[in-house]
Length: 357
Image 1 (cartoon, helix red, strand yellow):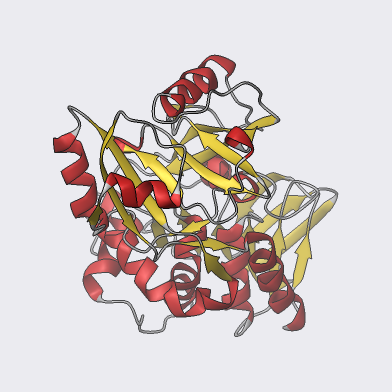
Image 2: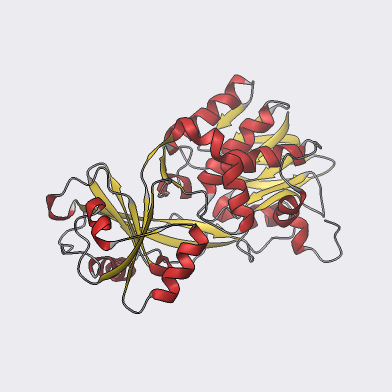
């Protein structure tokens, strides 16, 4: 028997399991054959601390110090065209990103074409070594005597003064159950007899294309269109391009929609001098959001032994260090280091009328 079972082997579940394992015996369950198989393994892997809603930004800032060993310089650029000034101004204000000249921008990304009229840039955005981070958290769980089980899908959950979870051929038991199942979070809640939170998965696609014009893209920043209608990011000598779509989906092993991908590649191509002639590979992931697009962290008001760690959206890696610490504090009955306003905004109680926050 474990003290705590964590369902979900993405960055949310692995980081939560690691924090909790410092104080309890933890078993982490992942249905796929490897950790980080779904959204975590298909992430753009960027740490941009001013990206997200206020509660996300608070978690970003609180995570910054932990992230340092996993970061490498990337930089962030926003490019706008004629007629996009209002959206450009909104984006730069939100991201606290200073404006630079178009000629300065081309020193970073030489393929920007003549339709570009405004550019904002700052260097303080970083690539995250996501694989290393996930496996370092998993090492912590094992070091502390916990278990990490992959290839063990959850098929049944029951509660009777404690949780019983059927995972593969095993029946596991624990006093506390943490739901970090990503796109499947509401399904796990229903299976456990808990009211779902309205966690909705949204597909986001990605194409990997050859380096445009044979350029060395190694030191290019990630660059976005106004309103995040597309983005492009260097990746091992090639370029990742995303339509940045958010198409509601059911929880499944996602794949890219060819038409959506083509439309996104066309939007990207309208900003650069080099045409897109070939796609090396493509994939998609599911970014899961609560109705208010804010993470859901903490004990369920109906059953405090059921703990939510869900709704990470596109912010899972950059918020994971602080989000997992907050989750551990709340689960173990300790006073959180995060400010009370942020804790309240992340609480599952916000979705339950009559519940005290």
